[in-house]
Length: 95
Image (cartoon, rainbow, N blue to C red; front, top):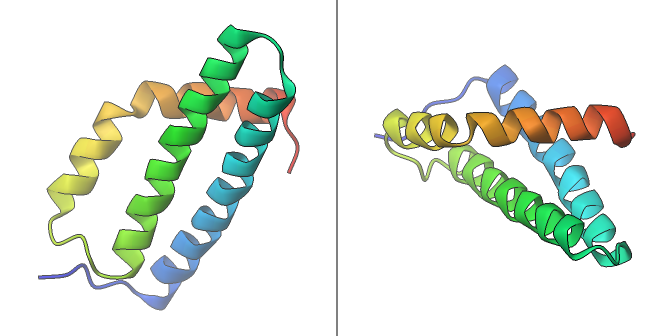
């Protein structure tokens, strides 16, 4: 059974997807701009993780995720990365 979203949930997910797409573009831009290989790897790693987040949101919006445990397991795996990403975004990047 697909996840049934309210209009507000759908709107919030669309907004989250837009913000993640901005972050993805910034991570890719910064990875391309730096000459520091360690930083480049870090930005590319974050870009990949954000892309996976965007794909998950897309799947939710399209009713492709059938089980909430898929989302919960995915989010628990990435709690530390999300915290680091949030810290970097708020400290160094502006929307």
